[in-house]
Image (cartoon, rainbow over all chains, first blue to last red; front, side, top):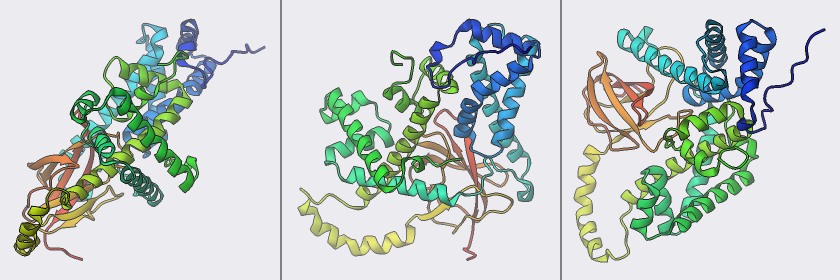
Length: 210
Length: 187
């Protein structure tokens, strides 16, 4: 009779609810080649890994990259590289960051060694997505409407914060604002943006889907 | 994080702005590996931050083109007087706007004329949000010919040839590369 293994983590629960002993159990199952361990690892981490890779590298070859990550993590666990099983999340994150850095280095290296245009590689070889571009332009238009609807001082606050990346405390000092006023300006602008977006199109289209 | 261990608004915004520092960055990224609801909030925040940045850059560009009239009436007459001269001179050196986007396959689609400043309009779709990116232009042999930022000042005029525009994150990571052909416009 197959043992029924309870789910490791409810994806909607906070990560802090994960039991470190359960992480250890998962790592042990993977280490001993238990298929349920692989399935659990995939179920728990696949969406998060896809999210990270998509955000860093785009959607090209995403499935292959996710597969590579799982391969690396499981091989590492079987080799005994993961010394603290309850640090599995941190380990997966480290593997992700290294893979992203390695991918970019590879592309740059290929670019430098292939001056011939016919053989050149692109860092992100994605065909332009007209729908994504259209949604992005729509969102920019909405943001412009929000900025134009503000008083010049409030608009200056947001331009300095989002474009110039000026520190909040510097903005407050130079524009004579309290921290509360600063937070209110940001919060109202964001709320207004989301309201306009909901009115313009359904909220699920606010975020271009890969 | 809040009492339930989820990301709070400020943490999400800092992450979208690529402004999270350790140890917060580790905590945020590890949490996002597991939490679908916080990932959704980050996605929305990314869209908002990116849109605001683009809009803010556009606002700044508009402000630079449109001088403030209030309190500057005494300059208006001088501006009108000089307008004819400025208009004639600016036409010869006005930056040429060139859109750069990544394309599948071989060949370079972006073209620009030689000998004029280049206002680079870079497709940053899908890249980590940043207030500005470092930009480097190299020639076909990989030799650097210009550096700047995006958004930022136009690139200097360059002679005819094949160039590559490289986009770097604030941390110095190479994010994207675009091809550009400079020479007489072919189309």
